[in-house]
View: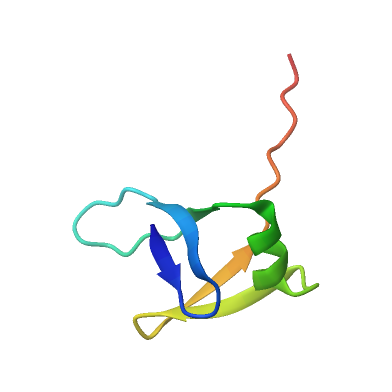
Length: 69
């Protein structure tokens, strides 16, 4: 588990885009232990910015697109 500074063990996994030649990833996913943590992090907003190792990261709730077929 990864510890959140405010809520303790709340993150199960962090998935990042695979890139080439050392380019920074442009997107990723954070999997929380519970959907309740998503609400705590977003605090009623659609998107929020957090900082990880002095880099600004924008978060929003992941909503899968419906499959047609």
